[in-house]
Image (cartoon, rainbow, N blue to C red; front, side):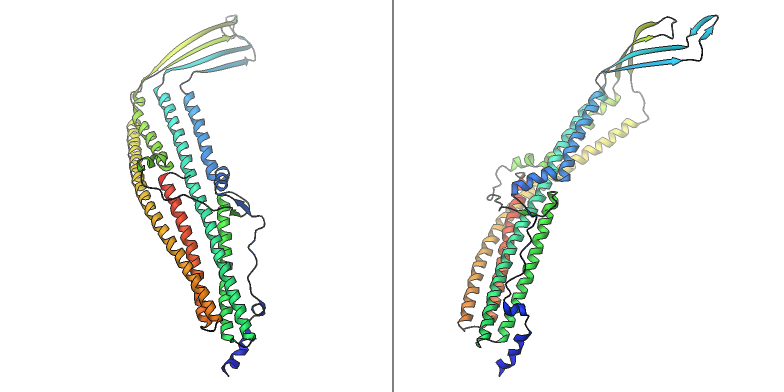
Length: 427
């Protein structure tokens, strides 16, 4: 009588489930760009706006360097003029200025002693080194973002595989529960539970597909592509490095080198304050030809030596000294803090890698045990020794264990990437 009362529940199930619910539509792949790990890094370096801007900053610094260098190099200029008056200018019966006249000259300027121009050239070279080091630091940050996005795509693929396998297992269990019900051996409660589990797994499958598309979209943005970008291969980031050679880490990290370049530039600015107290010496030589005066066409030359000694400037030099001293102190403090941070990051990354590897080993062992438990529960249910509650519970645990393995694998890869970044070995 109890079984008869439950039989009408089967008619309430959706037709799609009664037939066979084996899954939703496949993940879209039209227009999908698949790239390897190295290809993703190369595309980001060539196409990402941050990398392009950093490269152009180097070109800009080189342009400023040429401008600064031109200030202490000789210059040569040519000038000419043509004048027409309404009439000759006559004084005492003599034409003083003719109605038409022209003159031309060549002016050569040679800075002999120009301390400010010299140090500005040196400072422009420092600025170029800062731009080069800054571009390397920008590339480091961009490569880290690309690497993490690529690993996230791999994680979502793994999560999708776990969801698909769980959905397939739930579909097989639903088919078996339906077959038992149709054969008069099962009950509608078992079929309803199996249907619920199948629906749940299908929802999680769709969520996994959505997460994969979002990860592919994030990778596409970093690579400046117009279509979704997928990971084409697995990533092997190597084993667990040791702490040996830690003294070389500071020299390998692009952010440390960039800050050292900034600190060196500020030290040079502070060191070169003496030039604002130093004299400068300038020589100008001019060759000319004119027709206005004297009355007959004439030519000649002249030379001038200009010595300039700064005596009083209203206190501008003292203000500049205070400003550059503060900049130097700030740069040194920032570098010291960064070096301490690097040491902490390396130690932390080593510990995290070790812990992540241990967690991955345990997660894989748990997944093997969960898969075995699910298989045994299904066998016991088919033999009539247990209910499908045990089967569904075991399937859920197997699905969760598989998801934990995917997360642990991603955590291990991310930990290795963080360690490579901390030690300056990547990119």
